[in-house]
Image (cartoon, rainbow, N blue to C red):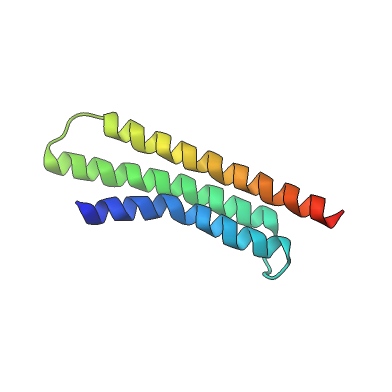
Length: 102
């Protein structure tokens, strides 16, 4: 069960880490991806991770006999929170880049 918790945590955190690292490099033109593409990849990856987490939790709940869906709501709300953080990070990176460029 601890392994699943670690995997769940990493699935939610990896898009944020990718956005921080690749977003900075895209703004500095150190990689071939454009900044909007990096943001899109982060957002889509987060949405897919939330969906995958829902499927994984559903499988584990049915396997263990849990009929309560409140845990699903918590995971999905956490996914929405991380998605909001990714969008805020994209905005902050873009604003900092624009203000330093002037």
